[in-house]
Image 1 (cartoon, rainbow, N blue to C red):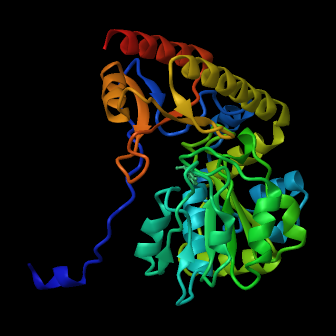
Image 2: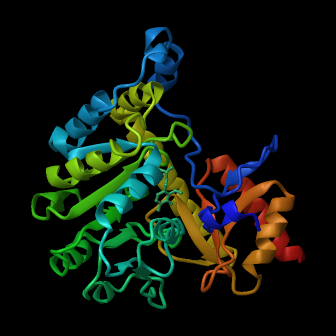
Length: 353
Ligand code: PMP
């Protein structure tokens, strides 16, 4: 080992879902939206040029902060935007999780949480989900250095009601509680109404799923002015130009088109309900999804086998080789047509295997 290697940080990085480059693939593995972003997003992008790109972006991200504050009816000092919710969550970990006590998040959840915790030397503990893959709120009633969980949880797709979130907040007045609402628009209750009562609540959302803009990288946090100010202080101590101008401009256009947003989210929810029925008929078992994906298992066929068989057909779903969930597949809801192709393949495969 070269002497300088001793000072290189060793981390086990997060592994993002595959982005295969296949011509006719059906891509149901990273929870992207199968529909394009609102029409004015592409138009705005096409019109960007000249000084808009020559100059640095606005470090305060004001146009997007204002659009989100108006949309959610919160103060402009209550919104923080970043490069996807991954960036916002990493910034929140850095800002709020500085206790010697462990932060808490479920054993089965978004697999980036332990990676940030390791990277930032934050101690953590992972209370186990119950047998039905539900979060047990009582596990979060003990002393801790902060709490983070997605609602709906991922990859389980299960949502908990507002009262559940409030119970956790009531028991944790002294730490920051982050609710990661990446998938909330597909059928869960947002914790936004709780912001008035709980200054220690931070809600994180994204444009990657319900607004079809994963490629743009836009995420945001909504919280009390104190929390948002603290996140901005950390941001300006790290990288003041996180958001590029195209993201700011296009993000605003997406927020403005409420009708399109409702239409596409509605289509995905409808397809999800139908997909659950069809997959159940094929013998699959699944959690009750409030997200844009299903978390399924088949009693007779191992998930790993199905994953490989689907992949051979250029149908990509997500498989986690992890404790407790290694017999499950996470299937993103695609267009009706994509789902039909999936059903047809599975039906055939299960019959002829
Ligand atoms: N939170 C959860 C629970 C997710 O599944 C994802 C998607 N990988 C993210 C946050 C991050 O999404 P993005 O950075 O695209 O906003």
